[in-house]
Length: 337
Image 1 (spheres, rainbow, N blue to C red):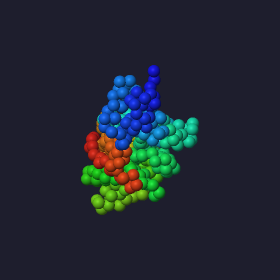
Image 2 (spheres, rainbow, N blue to C red):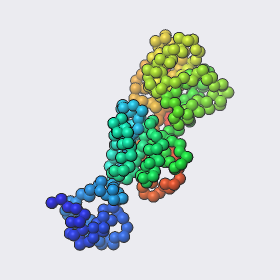
Image 3 (tube, one colour):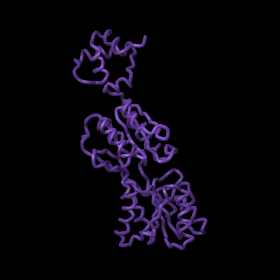
Image 4 (cartoon, rainbow, N blue to C red):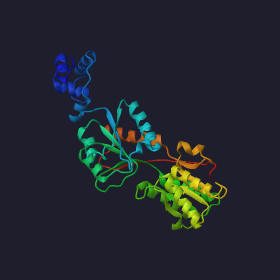
């Protein structure tokens, strides 16, 4: 026999509402009654309907993760799966389960609403390059607690964000290149118009200003966060005779594409042109030459996001005030610089 709230209530000699309050850990139940209900639940191995609990406003003990990516292959990107690992480790230690929501927008453009409407989760962690303001406004209006991995700006609602300290990380990388005698440093940007891209560029400018060097706009090019794009733009600059003695690329994939273009042009890395990337992907240490890079603590981003969301759910964090957590980066110097 599959038990229900009603049958458990009858066996325990209490009301259905009392059983619901015990299951959801809510106040208003005497301790002896709570123990009696829990004993009946254990004896009959009753498993609450988690979706029904969520719809009723109770706890589901589920944390959701959704990634709104720019391409269909976004989940294969190392950043997302390492962040998700950090999230999983923290929520599991707090007896929560993790639900990964598919991004169905190519097939159902309104699916992002369903995540909040179904309420199978107590809170949501949102990642990706294609997060729209209307998504966040909708989750806020639906009173679904959420945390963003990556900084977003919004004037109408408070946001809770966990992000890498991009500005400081790039400042350290470019300062390292300048300390090595490099004066004309090519900057290869990733996704334009994003918060983290603007902060990376600010770090690039900071390092030049601190060293008393001018920022040459001709040395800023778009790599579109892709290896092939960075390869092609560097190859074209070399053909055009543009002079530079170092490259900073906003991710490691682009840095590897740049190195390939330099080597095909007969240039030695780092003797003639030094290269530094960003992220510290697994391939960076095995490249030839091994790639200097700025290491993001991706698992730390996930853990911090999960910790922030659980603080919101427990009432420790004010939901009406924006909160930001910045995770420090580390410069990893290898053979390419």
